[in-house]
Length: 319
Image 1: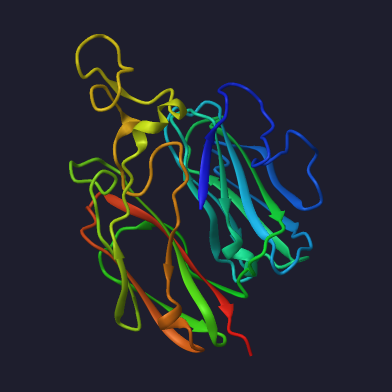
Image 2: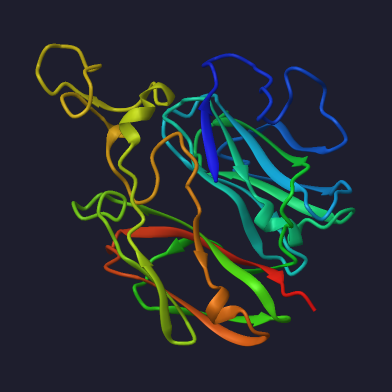
């Protein structure tokens, strides 16, 4: 579950309780500051850093806090905060899209990723924003560890490492080996539709159905779609605007006046994180052994693509 808030424009801030840097008190040993206002631009669109994960207990909740500070890029751009597994796979911690030159902060519960973030382990983290502008953005990211009552997962597997160029409607299959009997297994599915050229039927602005199957049996289907973009105009100060009633003012509510940031899109809106789709797969994947997970996206346009990632998390069954 993620939450996005606004940061004041053109202002250097330290974030509050739920943010990357605490305002009321200095960061404690339980918080891991990964990036602190690092520059992301047309030459350095991706940054990485390796850090040791703090010690924590078996019921700890993990919160990812990120802040995106607008610099010179006036456009909405896809971004990610991710970790790199020992096998070299990139696993998304938070997927987001920047505002049109709007500062944002995002908080997401990422306890499902606990098996990738073992206490004391050295983990490589990364940040990415798809900008082509000099001095495009400043990026901050941290992990916060809180006491909780529920047990975090024992096992996780990167089914689909970050794929920023999923174009084919052909199904893709992925091998999954469940290491032991699980009492609960769920898939975290992170997807957003985009286009290279808006040909009138782009995946950014048209609904596409997704299908997920395990061992040949469909276990989930849905249409990832967001319609709440008009609520976030305050995060999109340089958005394109159209005066719908001809009064010379483009600040009338949607749909009288229309901003680019208003429009419904394929599972994202400018200035927001991409909400994870969480799918219960306890029944088909509860037993130990090898399985095949297949993903298919219908009707992808010829000039369109999807940003896709997915990982499994599981809680081992009592012995």
